[in-house]
Length: 279
Ligand SMILES: C[C@](O)(CO)[C@H](O)COP(=O)(O)OP(=O)(O)OC[C@H]1O[C@@H](n2ccc(N)nc2=O)[C@H](O)[C@@H]1O
Ligand SMILES: Nc1ncnc2c1ncn2[C@@H]1O[C@H](COP(=O)(O)OP(=O)(O)OP(=O)(O)O)[C@@H](O)[C@H]1O
Image (cartoon, rainbow, N blue to C red):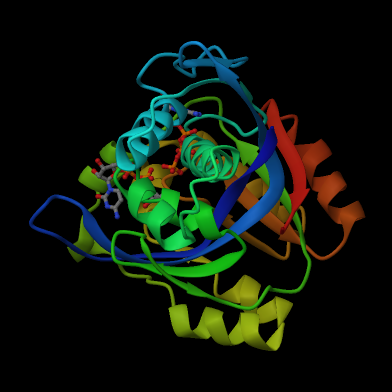
């Protein structure tokens, strides 16, 4: 069995408050992209995860491995699988690669083992493994609240090309949330404004409403991320924003030619540049 595990970007990301359990209550609009890892699953004597990326663990630390263990426990299954991850999504980038692989594995095993679990159940199992996992069970365009698990589907925005530029380092999501100073945030997303813009298919308003409060941590710390963002804006992207906790910055473009022109120019700043689109 072969599955696609798509990347995501956050069109808005607001943090409302820190909860007693240490997690943060968020409000964000998430969008899946065509850029995707490929997950191959086959029955096997013992569970094994293999990945072609040097920074991705192949042991119990891999979210795919955890997904296998968790769904086996939930359904009381005594079977094993070999899973091969073909990594195309940059790692520790703010694009949700690990969470997406995890969600794809849960969906794949549900199908392969005929478990008959509803999406809501897969989301519940996925939430134990990461706050972004429930979103990837659904995909598309969603308003995510709670710690990311309360999902409301939104209509698809108009098709747009997306340039991704990742500075040459990984960012720890935990560290970014820990270093966030909620009292000092001056610009917050207008979530309802973004929803209206998506509903009316207004590209200009979608671009005007892009906002991510986690930029206050990551852009402040890394000048390379700031430089990538500024360059995308200078080069004429219709809208620019950092995704998730970073360090990837995305630029929304209304034409493919513009996206390619920006991507070529960005290659002078960083090696990791991609052109993809909403999915
Ligand atoms: C930054 C985003 O990717 C935006 O989509 C998500 O909010 C993070 O999702 P994720 O990486 O799946 O998050 P998890 O793996 O569950 O959590 C990593 C760490 O981020 C922090 N965390 C995460 C989500 C959240 N709502 N509040 C948090 O404070 C916690 O310290 C946690 O230990
Ligand atoms: N299947 C996986 N793919 C990528 N990383 C994984 C995977 N499983 C575990 N990891 C670990 O998780 C870390 C974060 O990887 P990931 O690519 O998911 O980050 P991210 O895109 O910043 O996620 P998010 O946006 O959800 O915070 C990696 O450094 C790696 O050690």
